[in-house]
Length: 456
Image (cartoon, rainbow, N blue to C red; front, side):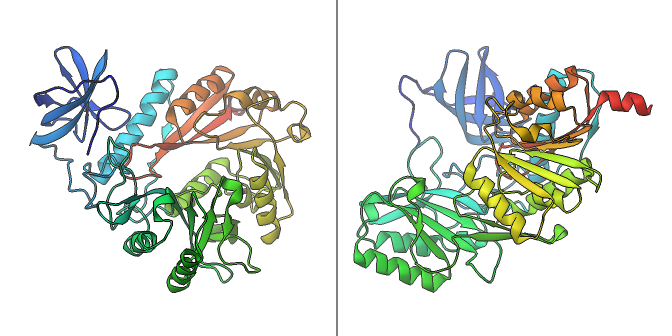
């Protein structure tokens, strides 16, 4: 059941609203008595009846009760739990229109900080819109009144867990397992002390299962619980990890000589990358492959190039670049991921690559890797962007930079700094990494403007 936040008030009578456009969060925008109303579940051009959830000083939040006049872009959600589940927010919008919305949002951001700049609009990268999600953190909660553990994403406007037996966006291997997983959790002695279950999926590999479950438990598991988990693991051909405390406590239930790894293939480059189930990896394998291909096309590395890959993680871009470039240096702030990059380079027999651990949001001037003379850079920062490292990039002045972003707002902010300091924004485009959500990923190509002038 949806609830209200402390201090907020809810409109007693539903409002009839005309929807003008979508907000950056994917909600319909309307106006009522001079006040902006953000309407969840509404689309541009629609007339809806909506219930106000929260009244703020400058705006109100509302949700659709009834669509009186529907947009031609409205569609039936692919998931039976969409109306309650908070995991997705745009399943009511047709998939092509979702991609167009995300593309418009990116270019609107760029136009705002760099008005009048002309650049190529890359086609939106899209792939499967259902059964795409390989990683997720699912909430778990034992509900005594129902006599079972609920496992899923949180409900809209609530901390309750959605009562779901399937999920349209999780890969089928995970979605199809939800009823059995719920049955397992409900039968455990510790069923009331399991707050979450994380899932991670890799490709088939001779040395590992392709699915890992990380079960967080707040009290010690009984011998009966451990036996049930072992039986479930064996029956479904997966690996179970237990987490009694923080992330450092995670360990595999089954003690054997296999490394604690999953694997994914990048066939275009003949690479297999290993990762721990808790490691950051892209949730959408199809988009990840297309994203890497586009990044390398824009970067165009060759045997003569020295490439710097910032925020490199476990080498998702670094290693494919190394199959083309003369030399690649990957830099990452998490030491465990640096070790994973080195592990993956060695396993794939790549000797023209090295990795360094460095906090790219702090003082990096002492690091020797900055002085190695790079002519091309790829950076894939977190949502906060790459503002702190830009001065160093301007110092080394690479000819080409490819910026992979998970936040158009910080990409636009950083683009403004690069353009102001002589770089040309050549092209940019959105990537639909998370279909049915308002989340936008993007990629942009920058070239040293002085180099362009010299060529002309």
